[in-house]
Length: 51
Image (tube, rainbow, N blue to C red; front, side):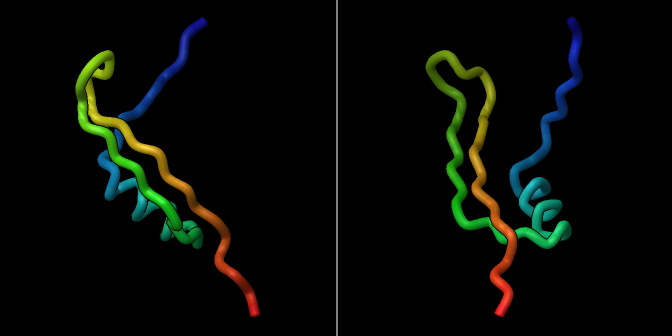
């Protein structure tokens, strides 16, 4: 089994989500340390509300 992964800067990923029409509602950034050897993040995005 093989796979590809891409590391994107967090701000770039947020921009891509917003360009796709989503609204980022939560953002958690974690710096490297412990077992993690690079920074990582979690984002929560949703469709915008329609009136």
